[in-house]
Image (cartoon, rainbow, N blue to C red):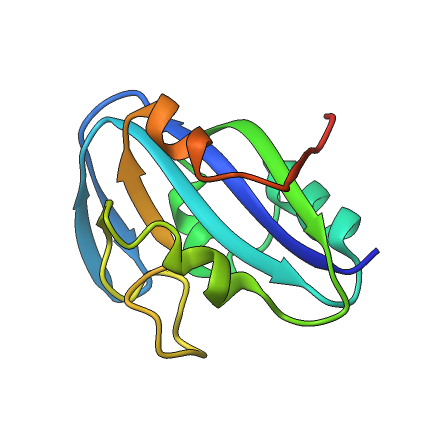
Length: 128
């Protein structure tokens, strides 16, 4: 299966986290991370769910401290993560997070749980 996904994450406490060479202050609360996988969506999501993995992407650093609450996905043959990320433009965001290969402001957004979930129209819940 190919497509895009959104991780709904919870950070229990305010935390400064090193993301690569950057140190970022994160507020406690809920985040939505937008990603894509055009090889194997299931394997990408399962990788994010694993505790032990090689640190490769920005989200890997964040996942050392944040808990995945829910995962949503949308099957697609083309990359749609930037279109999905645009739905979250009115939320607070971490500049440059997860979008080093595109022109988006970010792929990690901060907001109230209910408000983040409202943006997930036409996406299916990934059961884990």
